[in-house]
Length: 215
Image (cartoon, rainbow, N blue to C red):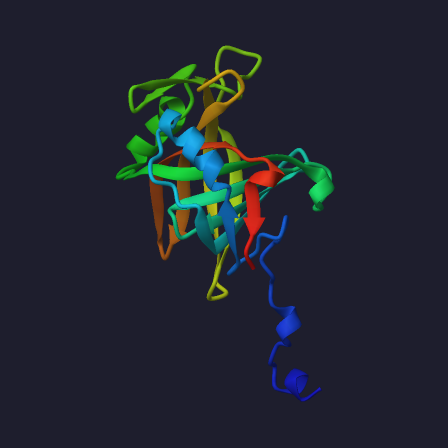
C-alpha cells in the first residue's frame, strides 16, 4: 500500500526474461562433451565450451504466431529455441547452438541499403572456404531477408530492441548432420544515432539429450 502511494513498483511488476527447457537468465547449462568432440572437426567453430553461463535472453515475436528465444552465453554463443503455437516445451520445433563468427560495422546509409539489397540474401554464401545453400527461398526470383525485432533482457534489468534482417543457410557435414549459417543485418537506436552492423553466426542442431541444466 505504501509503495503505491510513493510510486514504487512491486518486484512482481518487473518484466521477467523468458524461460524454457530449464534455460533462464543467470542460469547455466552443459552441452554433451562427446557430441561437441564428434562434431567440431567438421564445423567452422573451434574450442566450443561445454559449460556455459546465460548472460542475456532475447525474444522475437514472429508474424506467423511463433516465437524465437535466444539464450546468450559467456562463450560468445547462444542457444536458439523456436516455438510454434505456444510457449511451452510441447511447442518447440527447433533448437540450435549458434556461435558468433564475425561482426562488421556498417558505416553509411548507402552501405546499409546495399547490404539489405544483396549482401544478406543470395542463393549461396561462402564462409571460411565452405559453401552454404540458402534455406529460406521465396516463390519468385528474389528471396529478401526476413525482418524481425528482438527484445533483449540483460542481467541488470535493462531491455533493448534490435531490428534484424536475417537469412538462413545450411551445408551438409555428414550423412545426417548440417552446419548452419545465419547472416543478419542489425539496426539499433543508440541515443540519436542508428547503430548498424552485419552479424555472421554459424551453428548446429541440438537434441534435448544434448543439454544438461546446471542451475
